[in-house]
Length: 111
Image (cartoon, rainbow, N blue to C red):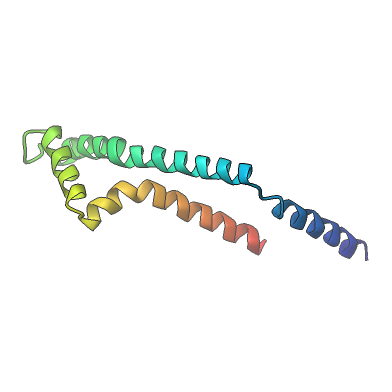
């Protein structure tokens, strides 16, 4: 009986909390999500190619072109032409973060 009463109070608090969506909280959530997207897009477009080029040179040797400028030029050309693999590469940090969020949400719902 005590457990049911406690569960009812927690459910009521959760329902009240979820109905408090207003314009300000939605704007803040949208800003946070946009900042997260832009930060992870920067990571995928600038930091990851640098890391891949550096590791590739250390492990595999010289790149077949002039250097990083040609490597980045090829990548950005593929992105501009709409190559899905290049877009997946650039968006992979954001997609990976969203998968982790979804897994955390599913984990919390099951426990």
